[in-house]
Image (cartoon, rainbow, N blue to C red; front, side, top):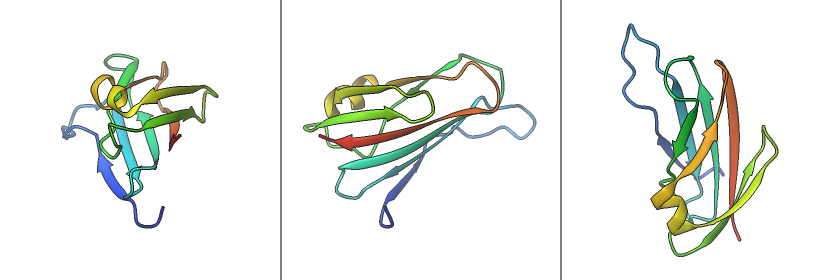
Length: 103
């Protein structure tokens, strides 16, 4: 994905306070594939992050592979863009790698 678009989903990080999530999305320019890194950086806040992709086509269908935890789900682009994908990380300094492929 050399010519990918990069979306940084992390909110503005306060200088002296921990932020619980860092999320980077790398999307193919033709909207057929994405790789997403979701990182939990502190124990504060909710243990579930709702990832809402920016680089997909709402009219297509996608497979979402949770590379760290081993799950796979199928969702439409419309579902992904409207509902997002819940990513659960219970512990500090853990991560999930999502690989999203158009079906």
